Length: 290
Ligand SMILES: [Zn+2]
Image (cartoon, rainbow, N blue to C red):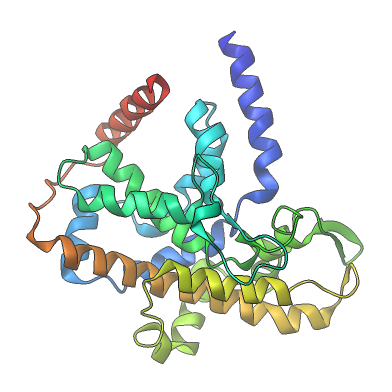
């Protein structure tokens, strides 16, 4: 039975793969850009929760957990990577979120949990890693679905004769086409957007990020299904810009959170490594029982 459930979980997670959001590189680079911009209060709080785990690593955790067969990850948390906007609607409306939540409502919940001194350490670590990931996903334009095609997963494209879909192209294809290591991509974005990263992109309101993504996602549908070099020329800079913005907004969101929470008791430092993994494991058992 357990084996069957595990196999079902693996199959489910494979089915979920096309919706992984920014590929790992987009998440890692955004996380590193965030890390470099945390206030002293936010740095202390984040290090108290994650130990020495870099934000570049923490950023991809929620996608790595999608292959976890635990029902919480397979059923509930899968919908927290995106928001939907009905075709023709001018903007996202959180009142239309499904009962189990979406990226916007989950992020608001994680904000409350991180600000609440009573939140248990394992749940606090989950909230921080998942919140960071959601902030980044909401900057991937196709994670704000404005059509009935599962965020472009249902929009087939061909790239150099190979079949793909628009969502996957935005997750990883556009970024990968630059053939840059994480470090080089980060350095390039830090240089190109030096002024914006520390000034104009301090917007911490998710509704603003979602509106930007919706506008970009609606522009991103090509006239034909064949993706030509002109599409890469036009949209690769846009995808890279969204990664940089995700990094800046991650810092803005965390800095605002820990400014608000500065009167609350300081989170006790928790050792990383096996102890953290044991606590994560216990937290998952708890969620399985709920
Ligand atoms: Zn995701």
